[in-house]
Image 1: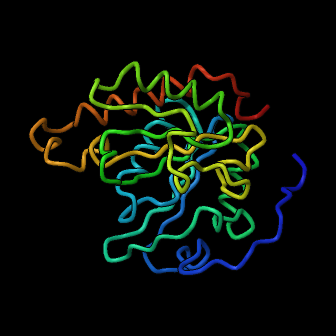
Image 2: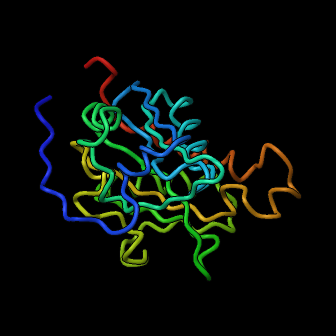
Amino acid sequence: MGPLRLRPRRAATGSSFAEVLSLPGVEEQVELRNRFGFMAFHGGNLERRTEHIAERAAAEAGASVYAVTQPDGIRRHFPSVTVDPRRSPMLRSFIEHCDVVIAVHGYGRRGRWDDLLCGGQNRELAQHTGRHLAAVLPARYNVVVDLGRIPDGLRGVHPDNPVNLPSGKGVQLELPPGVRGLTPLAGRLGEPFPHLEALIAGLVAAARSWPVRGPMS
């Protein structure tokens, strides 16, 4: 694959991807398998359980995965557009390896506690992923694929967002706390939390049924 072409970055306010990677205890990992990828670069103590979801779905689907986790005591949010492959050899190898990706994020907004949002530039993959999630999740959850129904800041369509850097672009999946098992409901239903297990099963089914090249092709 040829060199990765990116436009120059504008200065970002607050923490940046590069700054967070340099903090003690922050961990970055990549596993390259087939050309379908999962990523969770706001994992660990920031958007909790997102790296767990991405890693499990990737392992069970034979997909690739890239994750950044922040430890207890660190909670630095950085804009997705600062997640620059030129700042990380691991991220660069992941982006160049994958045809399409699903970036797993967590969010919480009043009135949207049961909405799973499928943003990103690959709208065909968003529809595909949304169908698989809706087929397995409890009826209480709403899988939102229509970009017009997703808040501007959660759409994930900016061209510098890493979810859109692979050749086939990708899907930014925003998950509310409940489906990640971060509400009292999870405690009442016990572990393994069935809603989280259904979410992962839906992601695995979406990845397995999407046509991608093998790891060495």
